[in-house]
Structures are given as C-alpha cells and as structure tokens.
Image 1 (cartoon, rainbow, N blue to C red):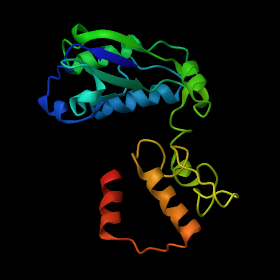
Image 2: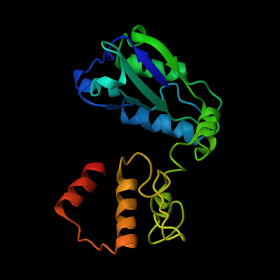
Image 3: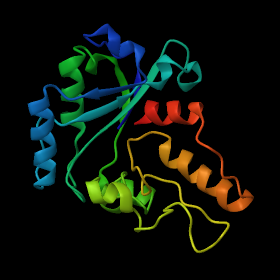
Image 4: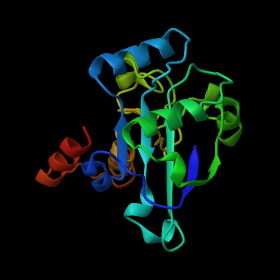
Length: 201
C-alpha cells in the first residue's frame, strides 16, 4: 500500500518518528499467531505490518507540508484479499488518528504484485520461503550463489542469501563475488566489512 498524507503518521510512541522503517507487531505471541496464520493459508486480523515513512527523512518524497508512507503485510501466497482495512487498522492501533491523515491511497494484491514483477510469484516479494535451508541454498545450492555460468553475470536480489529483509546484504555479497571473479580481488575481511555485516544481520 502507498499513501499520500496530510501530516506525519501520529505514532503513539514518539520513537517511531525517528525511524524510516517501523515494524508493527504487538507482542511476541501476536507476531507468532500472525505468521502461523499465513503459513496455514489464513489471514490474521492483526497482521505483521512493515511501515516505511520516507518523507520524514527526504523532503523530496512529498510536496511541502505533506508526507508519504508505504506498507505491506504478510498474506498467503496468491491471496486475492484486499488487505487495506487490516493494514490500516494495525497502523491505527499504534498511531491513533492515522486515517484522518490519509489524502489518497493505492494498493496492490498478490496478482498485481506479480504483474508488476514476474519474479514475485504469487505476490511473494521475498523470493520464496525464508526457511533455514533456503537461507543458504537460494536460488541454488552453490558455494557462490551470486555467480552464474555466464562469467559476467551475477545475481543480486532477495532470492540470494541471506534473503529478503536483510537490507543491503544480498547486494553487498554479490558485489564481493563480482570483484573476486572479474578482478581477482581476494580482499581480507576488513573491520568496516565486519561492522557492515553486523549492522545488517
């Protein structure tokens, strides 16, 4: 979902205004129940929702005095559900008055997501189930999953380790692979590399 807003999201907890990405989940038990429902092919009334509010940190994302935000929740693969109410209810739960700020909204179901990007099979932006095995063997079980039989073609997406949600690390490791293969760079892991990996883990 995408929104044009008349004001910033009115979070109950002011700490949320200091983050570009907010994970709305409630208690650990509520997170588990929400994710279990999706795994069983059901939809949770209180879904796990990821909210991004870029205009708080980048004024070019909205006209002066206005704001933008986008969010998504987990639903069963291929679901035709319009999750607008569920997502907005969950945001309203943590930011009373959110709906009063909405000027315009746009949403996509799983079919629209797959139409937008054919890699999103069934609407899955994560490139498949993030199971322990998939974490290390996507898209195929190879020592270097970023390299391909074409020596000048490398993979970088949520379909490569460590998967979607580990922001930037798929690209980071794909770049390291490309440098190694194309230029023979066998760099030692630096302190900066270690810090970057920890910050995205």
